[in-house]
Structure formats: C-alpha cells, structure tokens
Length: 173
Image (tube, rainbow, N blue to C red; front, top):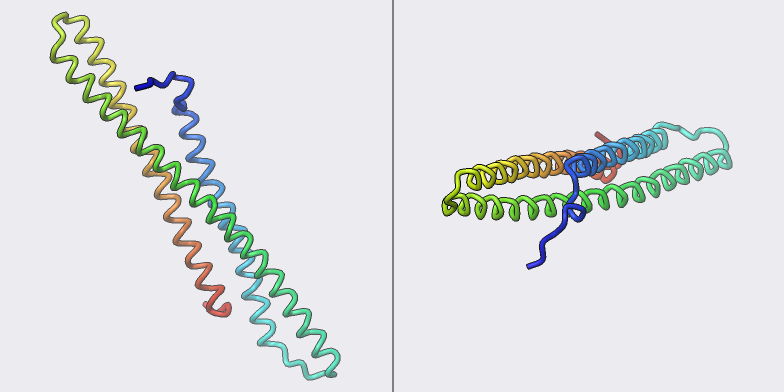
C-alpha cells in the first residue's frame, strides 16, 4: 500500500474553495439559463400576441424574425443547459471523491483508535489519541463539505428541471 504525501491530499481550504466554486458555477449558469428561458417565453408570447393585420410582407417578416429570435434563444439555452449538466457531473464526481476520502479517513481513525489500546506508554497513547481526534475532525469536515456540494447540486438540478419544463411547455408557466 502506497501512502500519500500531504502534497497529494487537498487542503481544507482547497476543498472548501472547490465546493464553493461548483456552487457558484451552478448558480451563475442557472441564472444564464433563466434569462434564456425568459427570452423564449417572451418570444413565444409575443408571437401569439401579435395580430399581423398589416401587409403579408410585414407579417412574414415579423414571423421570420420572431422564429429566428426564438431559435437563437433556444440554441443558447441548449448550450447553457449542457454546460450546467457538465458542472453537475463534476460536482457529483467530487462528492464521490470526498466520500472516498472520508471512508479512508474513517478507516485510519479506526486503526489509530485500535493502536492506542495496545500501546503501553501513556505519552504514546496520548499522541495517537491526538491523531485519532484529528482524523475525526477531518471526517466531519469531509462529510459536511460533501453534503454541501450535494445540496447545491440537487437544488441546481431541481431548478434546471423547472427550466426544462418551461421550455417544453411552450413557454406557458
């Protein structure tokens, strides 16, 4: 078994930063999607609302322009949707990585606790107890950050489903 060096393990600051970055990216992409969905709804509503009672040339030009606007907004939405789904996948992958780190740390903490019961010297037991306590704090930290990442992802996925539903409903809320 190869032991990782501290340089191969992320710092708590790095873990926090990555979880926060994923949450921020999901919020920003959801905001962009909201704007595109709102545009499509406005374009569809406008298309239904206009009476086109002037000339046939003007009616055709208006219809073409509205269709082009909706097509452009829909394409933008689809690209943004793919980007958001990519961030969801990255976040879920990182949640798994944090869960794996927590599991390994839990195993380490168990080994440390077990070792402390077989040591004879009080000073050695005290040091191993410190190590076990550090591992326990890390377990809680990793558990908390995995939960934060999951909560942000699930909230974003739910909002994304609402956007998809609005796009599929023809813009009617």
